[in-house]
Length: 114
Image (cartoon, rainbow, N blue to C red; front, side):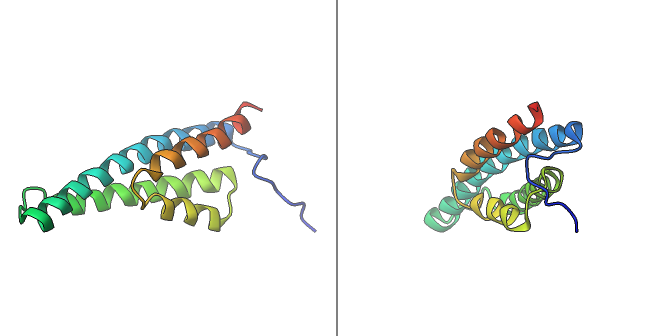
């Protein structure tokens, strides 16, 4: 029988630190991109102005990179699939990506310091 593994047992600390750095950057970028997307939607549907119509696909690419960073960090930090999905879904709500970035950093950084 295999011993259970907790999230505090990070084996590759250097790789996890890099994954955390990328996650933090992408969480902030995705959060900011969400505000540009909201502005694009307000302009398009509220004022019939398509000046930012190019932003939707860019935001999609940014969000997919964010999803990859969640998956990468989740594998290295030994998270369950449900936690990774919850982080991605939470980041779909404006401002929540910034809160998630702080909470994840507060959780993973002490584990890296051990």
